[in-house]
Image (tube, rainbow, N blue to C red):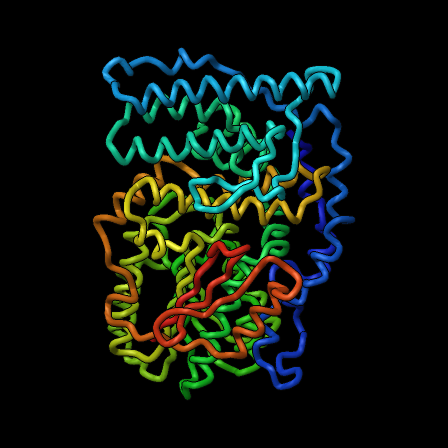
Length: 509
């Protein structure tokens, strides 16, 4: 797919010069009297240099990114459908045959124009092609066969959702076979999302394995290029900082549900060092098998704290141990901040919602006896999904969300850097796009309607200053990103991309 060294080296020098994960040490915290400026990464120059720095990847040979896509006959997916009857299946087969004929015409034209049978052409999906099932209007040029193919795939995805909603599992399997014929990691956004939704075979595994060789470099670049993680961390950190400064306690205890790579906290540690607040940072030990090294992350954060003159303690415990520790403590002069980030793209992993709810319930229990705040960042806008009337509309919402995510990523990559974009999508989008996990989320959604907003927490109003700084961070005036404030008492900050809600950050007390 690509040389392991290529993505590892891309922009490494710039990132090292910028101090890696957080703002540069020694930057002023109180320029113009604005505390929030210290929470924004000082590496904004990264994006302006993206095109030239990423050009390292353009040196790949043409044959280093060839993926073979076997075109199976639909008859291979026909086993077990004898019991399916009705017009739905007949219309599906007739429509599928017609769309295949159109795709063949498109393929013939393409080969005639290109003079041979090459790898699938890679075209940007900035043509704003969106599924009709997502209630967005599209203009379909009659002679645009690529658009026709993507439209037919959207119809198949909608048919899959409807079949699953009606309990027609055998029909759904047949539809999945048709979808897999049209899905591709090298196609438009909807084709790539569909590929990840159902592909668990050699193609997807190979791309993931090759991409993992460059994980550290890809992670650093992804976090800096795209605003999703930085926005969520800034919104949470600025709110936590407000709570700390409004409290006279000399000690701060931050409890992080999932510390990940630790990138959220360096800027906060720098601020706390200036405020001379003795700090404890606790992360929750994971029951799941996670590929991260707590000791390495702890040592890195301790180095940041030492450079900032901050006395810091970092520990990893279970939720039960946390409750016992805090309830058994005689320390009263302590400001507590519970932080939970779930489903943010740079995290590249999903978490069980039952564990999230367990953490939030524990936070509420402890805040009934201590002073503090809860911040919660949701990269899948899970609360919005509860408004879906059925599984079909639920699938539509998720498809819309991840298609928008892929399109926003694609807008930052020129076509000749497709390999880098594919690697990032494999690492930071694919883990969230799974038909099996989506169905489980739907089942859990119907069984568990409890959320933090409904368990007696009071919204913490987000300040105008933090909202304005967030707008500046995402370059709202010059980009397709928008910031909205919603929720109880204005306690929710939402990051949108072209009208699609991408990340929602809550604050409660």
